[in-house]
Image (tube, rainbow, N blue to C red; front, side, top):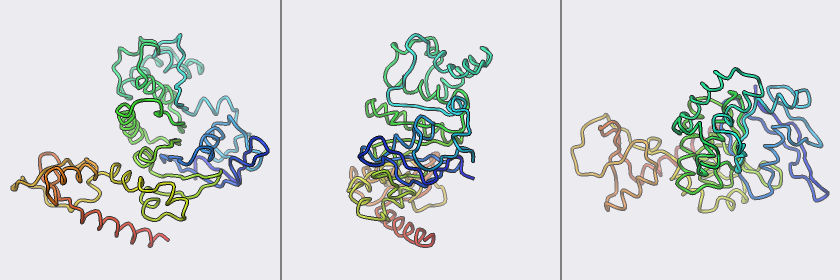
Length: 324
């Protein structure tokens, strides 16, 4: 049973036409869904309707098989995590108080709030001393981490994220993406993540939904969108960036030729098992070789060359044709 379900949903702001049009869409429990598309395609509107901040003119939205209008809207929002680009931390509250804000509203005991704060600050990759600081004392990346911690405080089933890392520098952004990926894997939450960045969508999403003019153009894995675009819009939207994003976000372990673990006996360059395909290509170019050895825990576990990408592409085609 889906945890979120849209049935024939249409939403308009004025007479220029619907922002979301006749949308039928569902999200299963534990999925990490990234929403991507051009500006004005309806990504943020869709997110706000899940949270009850916006209501559709037509159609119904269900959370846990219960129509949103049947929920106590305040209770619904308190049981969802929400992270936005501007973070929205309360400047007069410490980090600990910001993280525990929803718990305070729910009248959770102070001792439990403190325990949760210590647990979450470590989970998002910050030291515990930050709990006593104020938002003005934090960097942009640190504020975003606190925003994620606050969204997790009440242990929500659903976490909504609207371009949460868009305002930070590239290095911080990649670090935040890595932390979020670890958190989502560890906690098994349902996450709906809006982004305009193709690489971010591919890196984080177990499922990518491409929107245009309020409609879903294609919905699937990054491999489906890259290798089997359903129409011209999908091809043109991703352009040449799609394959580069695939190489950057796909780990080496998915494409190598595996071998029985053994010690290195040649001078072939090495690369880590969890490195990306793009990193493997860079190593080959840097050393002027046509293959690299893949290492895990100081043992060679496989080999990688351009032939592996071709084989992976062919396998994706066979697998997807079977599904169709």
